Image (cartoon, rainbow, N blue to C red):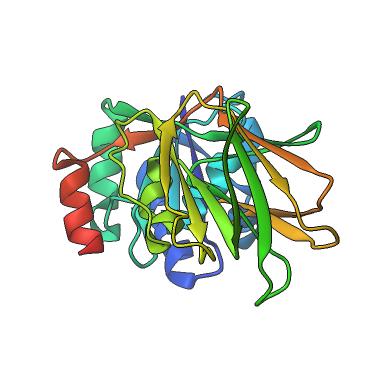
Amino acid sequence: MRRIGIISRCDKEEVLALVDKILAHLKSRVDVLLDPKTAEKLHLKGTQMSDMKKNGAEFIISIGGDGTVLRGIQKMDDPLPVLGINMGTIGFLVDVAPDDSLCVIDKVLSGFEVEERSRLGIRVNDEILPCATNEVVIITANPAKMLSYRIFVDKSPLEELRADGVVFATPTGSTAYAMSAGGPIIDPRVDGMVIVPLAPYKLSSRPWVLPARSEIKVELTIPKKDAVLVIDGQYSRTIKEEDTIIITRADKPARFVKTREDGFFEKVRNKLA
């Protein structure tokens, strides 16, 4: 029997109701693997996200908002394609309305295209951190206190700046935190990454768009000021002056089930205008 996975924002009753509805709709046709938290709410057996691929899941249905999608992708080393059902607000990564979900799922089970999106690989010293589908942000650990950064690209100095933080984003993440901070919107077909300072002190500190193959090195230059590194709003850790952060393109991309033909520009107009 074919297998798919389901992850959800299971703290909402309407989300759990939709999961139940999908399970009933797929009963006897498809074997469904549920993430542990969703399964616990429904008193069913759960499967870790990291195990869904090796257990034969073809794709993942994510029910919630963008955060649910990002959390699920972050837990997979080689991400399965994700079909996003929007139970959140804007939902830039979730294209399917709840009322259309059963129809769309049936169509996807008949065959689907996969859209790949590049991710960022992050390393702090010798520690490999989870990959970023949207962005990695380095911000001050103390509100209203600025940090000083030294940024290198392919071993060449790019900039030294003082700012509240810096966003390093993929084209997918260019419509998220990076855009809110004044960065450019980048078509996901562009093979690049963007650097956006957060509230920089110098007028000359502006966003940069770089080739995706670049290696970015970041150092903190003010002693005894801790910072926080945040990946896709899902993972965070403290970093210190002596730490070196390396950001590159990840080996494995994020993957999405393609459900729309109207394209990226239409989505920007509809969701961000």
